[in-house]
Amino acid sequence: MKRRQHGGHTLAELLAVIAVVAVTAVVALPTAAPLAAFRADAGAGEIALALRFARDDAVRAGAYRVFGCEPLQNLVRVYGLEASGPNLVAVPVLQPDSRTPYILPLNTAPAGNNMPLASCSFVFADNTTATTVAFDAAGNPVRGTGGPAERAQPLRSGTVTLGSASVQRTVVLDVTGRITTP
Image (cartoon, helix red, strand yellow):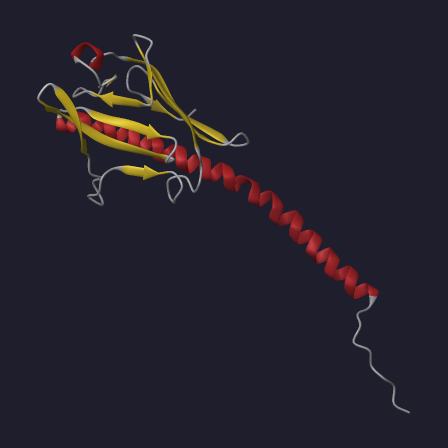
C-alpha cells in the first residue's frame, strides 16, 4: 500500500520562518528611522549652500543677491536685483554648474526629498520681518527691498526651518552674514 504525501508544513518549519521574519524586522526598523533625519540634514545643507552662494555671488558681482523662501511651493530661490528707473527688478541668478536659474525645490533630491519648508523668517533692525534677505555688494545681509533707507536695513536675525514636528533642522543667518546649522 502506498502512503499518501501531504503538502503541509511542520510546526518547526513555521516557527523558523516566524523567527527569521522577527529578526529581519528588528534589524530593519531602526535603520529606517534615521532616513528622515538624513533627509532633513541634506535639505538644511542645501539651504545653507544657497545662502552662501547668494552672499558670495553678491560680493563677486558687486550687486544685490536675494535669498527668498516660498513655503507654499516648498522651494527657495536666489535672484538678483537691478535698477529699472526708480524701482528694483528681480533678475535670475544662474547656478554655476547647470547655468539654470537658482531655484531649489525642497521636494526633490538632493535638496530635501519632500522635507517641508516649515518656516522662513528674517528680522531686520527696524523690526520688520520678511521671507527674503538680500546681500549687498559687501556681502552684508540687508532687507534689499523698498527705498534706499529701507533697502539698507541690516539683518538682526534670520532662520530657515525645514522638516516636520518629529524631525526639524534650522539654518541660522546672523548679523555678520555667518550661516550655521546648529
